[in-house]
Amino acid sequence: MIDGVLWPMWSWGATAGLAGRGQYYIMGHMSAQEWYKVEQLPWPADWAALLGREAPLVLEIGFGSGLFLVELARRLPQANVIGLEISLPSLRNAVRKVRRLGLTNVCLLQADARSALQVLFAPSSIAAVFINFPDPWPKKDHLDRRLIDERFLSLLASRLAPGGLLDIATDHDEYAVQITNSLLHSPYFTSRAGKVFTVADEGRVQTKYEQVALLAGRTPRYYKWRRDETVAVEETFPIPKEFAMPHVVLRLPADVAEIGRRFRPHAVAIEATRIRFVDAYQSLRDGKLLIETYINEEPLLQRLGLQVRARPTGEIVISLAEVGFPRPTRGVHLAIMALVEWLRAEFPSLVVVQTNLQGEHANTRGQRY
Ligand SMILES: C[S@@+](CC[C@H](N)C(=O)[O-])C[C@H]1O[C@@H](n2cnc3c(N)ncnc32)[C@H](O)[C@@H]1O
Image (cartoon, rainbow, N blue to C red; front, side, top):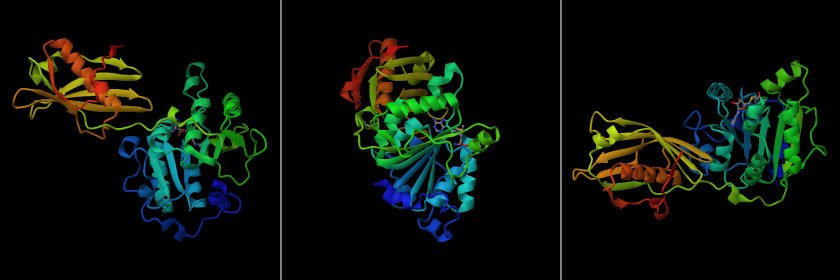
């Protein structure tokens, strides 16, 4: 039961002061980097290795200024606290706060909450999630950008441990209705407060947006819910798999320079995977091509380079360039196959000499979109 592990510490009022400094140094260093991105970590991430110890995982999504996040880490020295943000200025601010306080139980991620949750967190691995004042996206055209809906709650349910805590706060009336309805329709959560939300949360550290809302006379709603025992459908949100580093060897009546001259930006959709070949760049050193490619395979979006080079025999090899942190997902295999199909259309006599693409991928033809 999460409460037993985490929650004796979980009384804002009772633990409002700083814990002894020693408590913050039990794990050595926070992390080698200031923050991580989804593509830089194993899937799921090994939080114990990153933070130097096994500990209950507590997550704050969209931490903004980082005020609440550092307070979480201070008040829960026995937890590994993960902060998720998409905004770079917010990440820089939070890093400064974490450093200043010498907190070593914090790991920051620059990531979209949906993809990070699905990719980096094992099923039932999270003890508590906090979402404070998520962006309300008030315009009608933007409503689908709101983070919290029933599907997102199902994703959260698949990653929260049974008994895990979900705290949400908002000051936006319409978003509050959406959050209320989503929680009430979700089979995975039960209120801890005996009612849907409260309008006061004593002892809580106020976030920046909360302070603004209170000063402006708005009333925040605080949702304090718990993951119940209903089993979540984990297959709906699988952790993406990785495959072998892909490569294809081709024989065709063209050299790399000719392939570069023929290249035109184009896009292909294969099932739910969307691939865009954006541009081609040629190396001044050895003439190889780098095809800039975007691969959107939910929950992942990768921007990477596919490399096209010639062997001394004249055969052409297409592979994944090791620029940045590319991950050899199914979408990458599909992208290479789509590139081969484009080349086949340009050079109908093309022969595939060798490939390690999955059989399934080797025969997939995409639709241009
Ligand atoms: C309205 S601000 C609230 C910030 C802070 N929680 C507070 O209460 O002061 C919403 C924050 O969520 C972040 N955010 C928005 N969408 C996100 C997403 N999909 N994943 C992670 N963070 C997100 C934004 O960058 C922004 O910092």
